[in-house]
Length: 352
Image: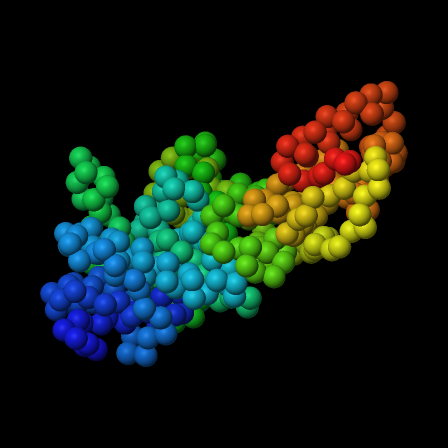
């Protein structure tokens, strides 16, 4: 497509057809090469912003454009999909493995290594529908080519990087949390509440989903629970990760859901819950979302929050704690300490 001297490249990103205006024919040719696996002839649904890119050198322009294309697709799917800052690969049966980790945990390196054995879906963003479909994001890989200038990254097409092609359809089957430098024992099971708290900061627009914690928790459970990979070199664990896709999954565990409800106003002397977005309970662990932050509660913290299903006084909370944990000579003091901690995290509101 061409308009007013500007070439338009259209790519399918996270299931969304995004128009990428190029500043000249040379740039368009370069982008088409980098995005070779995502090119589409479908009409564009949205367009990437190109403001401020015209004066940048080619590598800077292309790296920035990749970010803007991704952002535009994330905006288009916000509130309809679970979008995680993660990489993903899939075997030929369409079973997808997502690797989640904060910046510096080695997502791109892990995906490049895994994509020598499994099909490349994304090294940056995993977008999952309610039916567990993973929408490919076959973006160029951002690669540091000069160690003395790590801020300058080249955009390398998946074809030039030699990454395998995935099947047309992929379904999320496993979630692995990357924990590089935290041991070398390989895959270790992680409780769903712990995984939720670790994954929430690595999501985009999670708060726009109905029941965000329940959605994330159910996704993790449909993958047979989450696992953490404790590793130093990803190459030492490729066999383990590839075979992990075909291993049987454990049975799902539905949580006890605590959606936001209207509570009666507190009376003098009563404590109450602060407004929360969503909460899920697994056995003795509870995850509560305040704003865009997920808090993991156990022990007294969990007991207190659940006891505040209606506003109550400290003596009421002591009684609830003793029913659940047994009598304790310092129960009142322990409750006060726990309440102060919950207040500090914005989870409960004191009287008055």
